[in-house]
Length: 296
Image (spheres, rainbow, N blue to C red):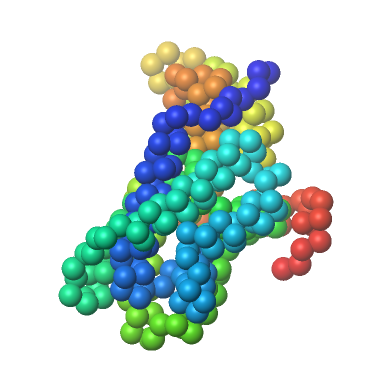
């Protein structure tokens, strides 16, 4: 079997850069300008800025470096490069936007601020995820827990966001926290819309004469189970095999690459999955290495 192409593509880098620019724009001109908090690593950088005056452009790098070092062995070559690139681009644009003499006049309207932050930041993040990128941070933690403890990414990200938002009450009041929650909801919806469901599971049906090669590659590289279903062509009445696999949305990009590598003319149907039960989603996955020592 030929090795899967994990080369870095210019289009991916351009779109990841654009996504970082948009997310950073929303964070600077809506969140920071109107004292709205955020979840995840971005929320931690805002806490450090409020309490110690540390520029988020610098703290983003400082926080993500150890997380990337922890997660590099589980990301794969392309994912690692895209994560490092996304982290650098986010820090760069945070640095740039904070030094641009530009103000969005909302006359203190926190609802408009929450809407603007959610729409622009959500679209930027969705674009980033859609092209296989991340900005490191809690995404790495969530991927590790999903892969080795069977905890869905969405659940881990939600828990981490809740913790960060609660800590954010040390520098914002309850009113601003209420509008931050509105922002977070809009942000999540826009990310879902842009990235076709950022954290919900996806069921994928694949029809291809190279079904076995594709199945082997999925199981080897994504570590997801694949079902072979007997099918028949409605017109030709020829027997054929259908592949069915359920993946996390963060894996869709790599799954598309695997399929295209073996058969760029394969028929692929992606289905929304409201709930996925079983190994890798709700059951504990096999323990590996030092992460197997982690406790619930």
